[in-house]
Amino acid sequence: MKSGAAAIRAAIIDLDGTMLHTVPDFELALNGMRAEFGLAPITQQVIEPMVGKGSEKLIRDVLGLDFDTDRIDAVFDDAMAAYQRHYLAINGERATLYPHVIEGLQALKNLGLRLACVTNKPVAFTQPLLAKKGLTPWFELVYGGDSFPRKKPDPMPLLQVCRDFDVEPARVVAIGDSSNDAEAARAAGCFVLSVPYGYNHGKPVQSINSDGIVGSLLEAAELIGAHNKANS
Image (cartoon, rainbow, N blue to C red):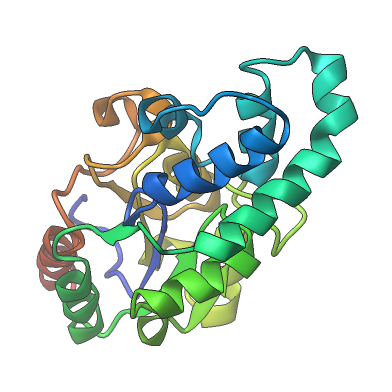
């Protein structure tokens, strides 16, 4: 993060791969769906690079392992319904918090930052998951991948948070694990910090155009605190 810039007043934080390791939940839900179509189960290693671009693309990619485009189109609605049914039944059952998430959220709050969670996960999955993992109280705003006509990497959800908070994008940082988060932040005019332990569609975190790689949300808070002190 560069000196001479405005002090940060708000943070927009991603969910899957940033606060929670959710691939074990995806494994259960996707394989439940696949079983209904007579398809063999797939592993977390296969699933992980597919996570992060929304449920529609996830289901198409998973079906695409076995079906051609015409077959995917024919079964998509039924597959999506099956996936949603399975996911809602197990949501959060096997997902785990990454290290220092709660401490990081507390540190961000201690800096006086307003916090929003913006994820490409459907909001009907997001709200119960945040509640189950004790994350709901930290966030003033929560937006899912179906909260707006466009999702990350489009800047629309981030710009809406800026408007809701009445904070200039230049005073907002997006924290995420993928190029989706960075591209949305760049287009919105926000800072962006990347965590190295998430999914990023199977690509190295170093390939992300971000303002820094931070080992945890706590480290992100420390960096933002230093930035604000230098630019107050």
